[in-house]
Image 1 (spheres, rainbow, N blue to C red):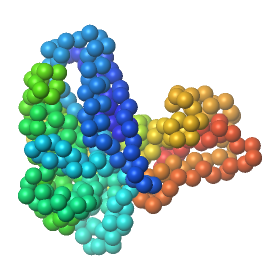
Image 2 (cartoon, helix red, strand yellow):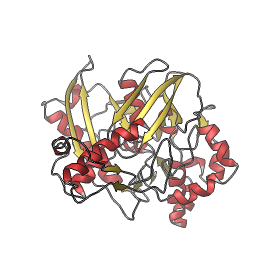
Image 3 (cartoon, helix red, strand yellow):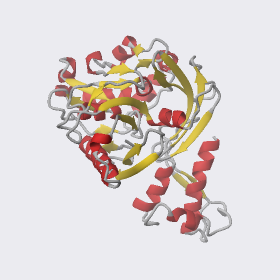
Image 4 (tube, rainbow, N blue to C red):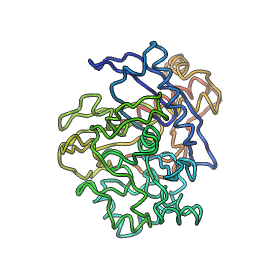
Length: 380
């Protein structure tokens, strides 16, 4: 389940792709720098993608052996445990609304303790300040949370809760490590950090291994069948595993909505001296592996912006033709800091800029500069 689309892939027992389906869904921008998703659209688009993947190869749902969930990380949802209704739209990982509170935290001594325990820099990217914002949005929300009536989750938790007919409220190590609330050394929700953010522990999911059978889908919520839900992993850690970076030192970079360069650093967490994140890669059985991560917030999303907001192209693939129709960028550079800059700058207040425009600048130059920005950010 991604930031701009939901995807379903069916694999056979040899790991080969049998079919795949994708469904885009709405991006909601209530204010400049704010990004939200409708939780119902996340669920509905994911279910539609699953049905399309089955229908496209005329496959009976009975043949599905198990379901794994991989997801956009950090995006924050809080819902009513009983009826499953969200108390607010999902606040997306890209959203900058909590930048001011993060700036205040950075001034405190406790900021270093958060960094040491969670492996993360203080940034609006992560879930902690988003949870705090939703709880403070209305007094009734905070009161309900303190009574244990609400559940917080990243997108994996939301999907599993719905897949299992509201039975399971869980996450895995990789997603928990992206909340800025999880101690990656002790493998537990950190009481001191929760207290600092005024987040009641009873709203948090149980943390499980990234690969185990957690339970079954509810016949009423998914294809009318009970199918084991047998894996959860954050999308970028899942990509590190999928690119077979099983050994310490192996790295991958994935080009999607954003770009995320991850390196397997083995069984012991190491704090970066270069403003990268330390995160849990995955937990399988009792074995935890860690990764260093460089996060680029806007990569493929810059092409989507050319298409949807500027209407310069009709399909994302047209950007390549435009960009390659000229020999150079002629001094035009694009900084796509629509939601600030991630690693290594971690500037929550940076905003996008196109530089070097002359009278001779064309759509081709802007398209080329947009694609080159992905390379420049990756190099940084």
